[in-house]
Image 1 (cartoon, rainbow, N blue to C red):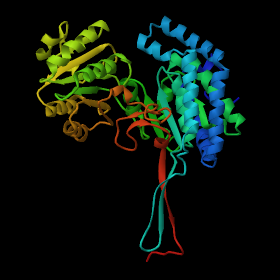
Image 2 (cartoon, helix red, strand yellow):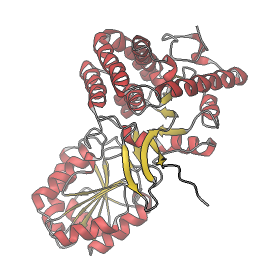
Image 3 (cartoon, rainbow, N blue to C red):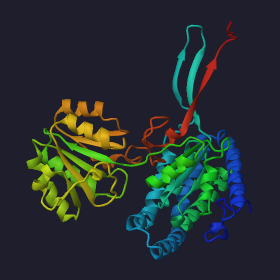
Amino acid sequence: MQSSTISDVKPGAANIGQTDLADITRDILTMARQARQAARQLATLSGNVRNAALLRIADGIIARKAELLEANAADLRDAKNDNLALPMISRLTLTEKKLDAMAVSVREIAGQTDPVGQTIEAYDRPNGLRVEKRRVPIGVIAIIYESRPNVTSDAAALCLKSGNACILRGGKESIRSNQAIAEIIREALIQSQMDPNAVQLITTTNRAAVGVLVTAEGLVDLAIPRGGESLIRAVVDQATIPVIKHYKGVCHIYIDKYADPDMAVNVAYSAKVDGCAVCNTTECILVHKDISARVLPRLAAKFREAKVEMRADARSQGLLQNAKLAVESDWGAEFLDMIVAIKQVNSIDEAIAHITQYGSQHTDAIITSDIGAANTFIQNVDSASVMVNASTRWADGFEYGLGAEIGISTDKLHARGPMGAADLCTYKFIVTGNGHIRV
């Protein structure tokens, strides 16, 4: 048995409640050193070897459904006893359908083009030097997340596909589920004759482990937190290594005066109701005053039927009925619930100004039939994803063809938007000469 915090610990292990800071520090740094060694091996392996491991992971998820569901049931019992919020319980819950989707996601990642070693660009200099910019793995990636056990398999698969070792730290509410998935991954790596420390799971639920992990400079290259704003800010506040993040998903839909009313109502309704507790749900709907009478009453009727609480500006209340008067804090709020803010605007410029002031640079959409308005919106809304006549809910790694996503970045360096395997690579320059010297 290796260090008690690595991924070969079985569900229910005693170290779940580990509290001694010295022991936690020792164990996390041991994991980081093991991950660094595993990353060196990964960098030398062919894409075929890494893909074979991914396919074994997918097969293991299907073959051991009963074990995974049993571990998840134990997590759910504790979550309900602890009165965990319903959206969190929903994200925590595994079903046979979700397990099938997890396996499909891993297989899709395996089937993608290998990003490692890809030539991004290449050119010849006038002096005869050949310059090539080539994708290479980042190294060791720490991923800190809450609730969703599927992140364990998605994150591991994306890191393996991109040639990176990873250290995973899920939330305490999903500890047994995560351990059961991590055991499947570990066995697949061993069967593929790969270093099993390429994917490690922290099993202590003590938050001090995160602080040690994100300050392990020289051992861990990058941290990616996935979860609520408080988790992400806690990671950023402690980290001395680079962090890719998004704090909030305050997504907007602007219904332009040239919008098709049917499309506007359908898209705005779906963008709020069909997944209200995720970061790409629409939190605020802006409606041009010239079309508001044709859109807002219809939209309000659908929202009332779905029991969506509407918080609106005074000008819109009369068209919505039952809507509460919005307060300043409603603009820019990430509700993650059946609540939506609604406001009329006088122009597309006012809509853009509102999004600039209150948005989170995650995903914003325009509904319009006017190409000029669409282009104005695209050029002036500085978000990671900008949608035209489509729901904000499409901002997702799977839907972008990435197989899965390691997270969604609202940063501008090094990656932006939904991140797939290629976004877990950096690059290096390869320069080839023929005895060239510089004098």
